[in-house]
Length: 356
Ligand SMILES: CNc1ncnc2c1ncn2[C@@H]1O[C@H](COP(=O)(O)O)[C@@H](O)[C@H]1O
Ligand SMILES: [Zn+2]
Image (cartoon, rainbow, N blue to C red):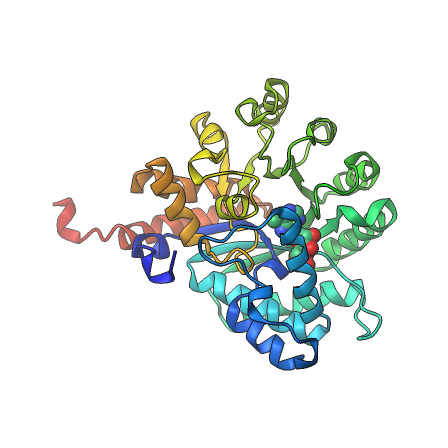
């Protein structure tokens, strides 16, 4: 879908983005700038994004991240990427964003995990001081491929930053190639994170055959679930698992294009959004990797609406109800709800006379 095919209603709709991986969210213009900084890498555009109508296996998607990581390996790169991504989300009508990213160490450039996080925080503060109209928070990501020790180290870092970042670092994300490693090895680190007050958003059952792991991790319980594609019995999951998710009222972050392009869901109309939404369970539309999957949040809302026949009022409620799923405190939720009330007449183009 081209940009101009997205109806203005979805662009103007105020939105909350809760599932966005920094390096998966890098746009074409930013990739262009990175490529010109590092021409010796010989990286072409086709290697960093999956275009309209294209599909990749999830495995191939993870190869794409490796290419992007080669392009983003200094503090300067991270600062540019993070500021660009934040401004792009703001331009798309996102009013509150939780960015997530895996701190990396790059010996050849002097980048450390600590300076990685500091740089993302610097970008958030810079955008704020420039008056960009978006509230941005950060979730530190654990890459499941890196095992127990790195997970523990990441929790420690996240805890330090939670205490020193004026509420910018709110929690942890568990992501990475779902076919590698097992959640049981990460459980102690996640438990520790929870105990110290970090919020948890975990990628669960993004591929089939992870039910046992999901069952285990749901006992933490996490504060939100990424994807959860195969949790529902209609998708090969189990009623027992659904009961746990419902009992703890754990919101799902749902990323339609990511799942279709990554081929874990065959068609938009097969997306598990419909099962959870029908149940009235908290379901939040998100992008996952807007750069890699060539999408944005307005497009994802429009896709959800056209695929599942949602009225504009239903779409408004969907974006409004996402506010209750954010990790920032209640005061922030109240501010956002006020903003939604203020913006509604503009978005629906009510005029004074309409109410007469
Ligand atoms: C497509 N579905 C997905 N499933 C699982 N993990 C994903 C993902 N998409 C992205 N990531 C995770 O985010 C990293 C890139 O951003 P950052 O370098 O952290 O900013 C990937 O390396 C992977 O660990
Ligand atoms: Zn994700």
